[in-house]
Length: 144
Image (cartoon, rainbow, N blue to C red; front, side, top):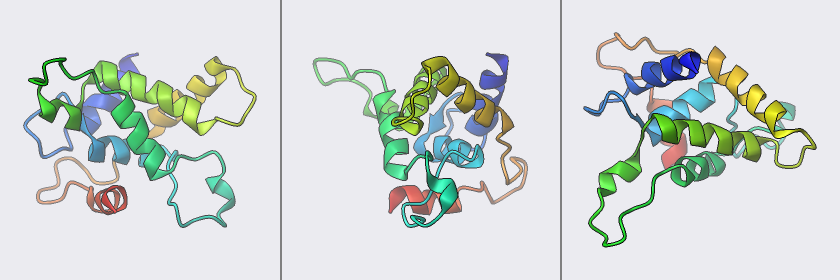
């Protein structure tokens, strides 16, 4: 669990938002991309694409892990743009199911694979590098 928290904090610190203990869709996408779990929609001939997430599935996992809005509609809509640590854990579980949707593997095997991949993710752009947050590629891919 400590490895997951460490990776969460590392990627949360990349964000330009003042919420250092939360991931945005962009920083979560960067983590998943750098874990080797994401593929581009256009890479249909890539043999490595089998079993990798699409950007749509990534967005679904992010949105599906968000807490419920308040019933009276007065909830914090900004919260839906950020992910706290428990939501991050839920999103990783959702990804483990999405990634191996058609495979006959136990849930434990699916989750272990995702956790192993996330544990190897290393931000390609150092956090301390001024003026660059390494989000250009993932921003373009997630928002198009």
